[in-house]
Every structure is written in structure tokens, then in C-alpha cells.
Image 1 (cartoon, rainbow, N blue to C red):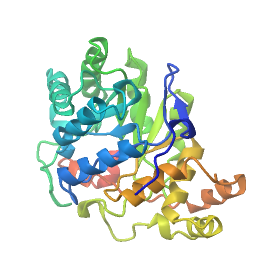
Image 2 (image 1 turned 90 degrees about the horizontal axis):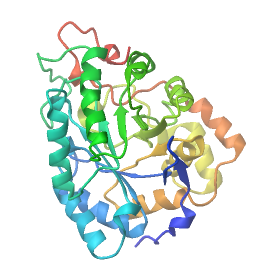
Image 3 (image 1 turned 90 degrees about the vertical axis):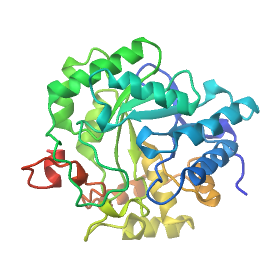
Image 4 (image 1 turned 180 degrees about the vertical axis):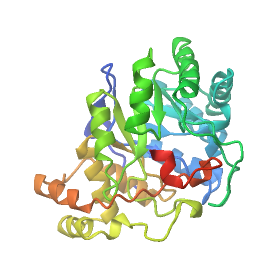
Length: 330
């Protein structure tokens, strides 16, 4: 049984509007490995231990059970609604045409909330795949990124913000060039950008760009996502927890290498959202950010762990005529 962490011990970070949110959250994407009941049970345990930031999405297929967890925790006095920071995302098949509002309405109903703390555009194009598909799946209706089309969806995001249904509107899986194409036309700027970040894939250019724009970064796959879907695994992928730089620091602190990855991301200034259904793991992740920080020398050493190894390549979103997954990120 994990120890309950005092909220005052958990570092917070500030968004551009001054609101403070926890420096670590819990992911809820496990649909390719774990059922909704397992994921929601982990969310319940995480709330009890002290997690207050939860990263959800409609496509994960578990928001209804996670919503019952939130409802019970609030009703039982474990946590107040205002102390939770709950995010979700509009899936790719609900871009434009008024569908963002419909998507959020279903999410709020499933999560049993009156508003989302942050709502993201999950991917910057309307390309989608069947749940549980393999890596060779392709949708013939997929299209390349279009700034004009993206901004049509963003206008709907701005509408739900004005309606008070989402306190922050956000983006995910963007690149510097895509942000440069759309940010000047955003009436309301994104508060957060979610992107893949782990020691072997730092994304320095994108991370630094977001910092300059006063956009906070949430980093998914923070420990290299060993349980990511099989479609996202490829020969040559790096295992972050086996990198020599990570392993050496783990030995020095007498901790699991995964906790080095968590500490590194928090001290760098992004918000990791690790996922696990095992209490000992998610308890350790939360505790790791409250004690025994990495030294300046260790943070410098981890710069050498960069391998430019993107794990979530997104090839299932490719359009006819695309040369490879790299086209998604150009």
C-alpha cells in the first residue's frame, strides 16, 4: 500500500494565467493492454494517494468508469472538485462541423463533470483509425495537415472556452512549424501543449519554443512507454530505462531507472503523465517528485541520453501518397 502524499509536498507549476497545477499527473491510456475497469481502479487509487491531475481522452474508451471514480471521490470527501485538474481531448473524427461541442458534451457526461479543466485537440488533423488497429492500418480518407482546417476546429475550441465548458483549451502532437502556422491566428492561445518527451527524445526545439510562447508542456511516454501498443513499436526503438546515463543515475540514487526519467522531466519544467495499473509504481512516481532531486551534474549527464527516438510515430494516420511517418512531423 502506497503512502498518501501531502499536497504541500507536491511541486506545482504555473500556467500563463497564473493558475497553479501539479507538476505530475496520471495518464489513463491503457486501452490496448488494460480494460476500463483496471484503469479506473488505478485512477481511484491514485486520487487516494494524492494525484490531482488526470489526463483523459474520449478515444481511450474508459471515461465513463473514470467519471464514476471522480464522482465517488468528490462525494466521499476524498477530494474537492476544485482541487482536481482533469483534462480530455477531442478525437480526430470530431474535428469541425460543430462536433467539438458534441464531443466535449459526451466527455463531460461520461466524466460526470460540469466543465473540463483543459480540453485538447488530440491530433492536428482529422485522420483516425479503428480502435486496436495494427500498425499497417490506413484510412483512405486521411489528409495532410492544413492550417486552415485546424483553425476551423480551433474556433470551436474557443467557443467551448467562452461557454465555460473548458477552463483551458490546448493542443497536442504539434510541431514548431505547425504552431507557427496557427498561433498568430488564435484569438485564445493554448495553455498547454502535450507532446512525447523522455530522455531519449527530448524535443528541445519544440519544448523551448513552447516555453518562449508561455505555453506549458505536458510530456507523455515519460519513461519510454514500455507498454505502448504494438503498432507503436519498431526495430531500433530505444528503451529509456536501459540507457547508460539513466542507469548510472538510478544506481547513484538507489531507485528504479523509471523514477530518474520522472524526476528529470519535472526538474526540466514539463509535466509528466506516467500511467500504471500497479499501485507500487504510481505511488513511487508521485513520491519521486517530492524527494531526492537530481543534481545539476546529473541533469547535464542526461542531455547525453538524447537518441532522437520518437516512439509514437503515428503511421496509422498517414494519408495516400505520404512517404512515411516522418511526413506527419514535418
